[in-house]
Length: 340
Image (cartoon, rainbow, N blue to C red; front, side):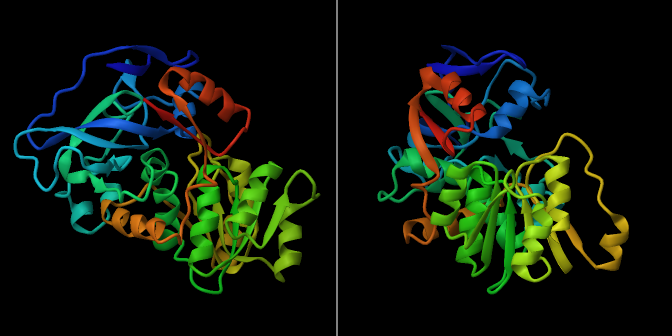
């Protein structure tokens, strides 16, 4: 089968033939129909972040597809089922899993990091983690639920705890940030979207943002937001992963506010500890999504409460995956999907 293999940083993915995987006990072989391109992969490709499994490794952690084969003991699924594969999955037995925090599992597996991922024709995963996809949803769109939508959903609902009437700022309106915008809007918040890309800000408005700010066009974003909101926001999300934007999100809060960081940062982000204490602010991180949340997300998408169409900018054949990453580097589109 064909796969896009990562051999190390600062070189393109290698489109090559690799052995087709065989499902073991309790596993399913999935014919990949779509896999989203994620900025996390650029961390491996360009920023020196190491994969848990040393290269060579097949990247890709945002897939959906069709069950092609089932291994011995794989239950509750049939060949031909349309399924989503969560980007990370848990052991379900450790102390964190038993507490309902599967995304913090001690034995957490991430596709394209701990094991070979889905920039390939086929992938094998435990059948128990698969999430059914309704026939009304195209698989090449549904795949982005695996990370680009599920990660913001978990952040909005469980970590930032957005409530009806909250004022929310979203710093960074790429794939994650735009989905924070729509999830927070569905939760009943008034959302302010902040980015430097006008096209992304237009999409943010289409997804429910009531205000948009191009940070290149105002002298002080924090002052501008305080003026708009009468003192600051209840909750700020940082969806980029840069110390400067984490600090910006922190400075957008009014007293008693909460910063939720979902962007992965390489470097430390110094925050004003005096302000943290004196204003009783909160800073929380948010990682991925627990397996139990996927069915409820799928229902919201099926019902049209959450939408995928503005998020998926288009599809590319697997052969053009490096071109897809070039588009991401240039800030073109929101989420590109490869279709093996």
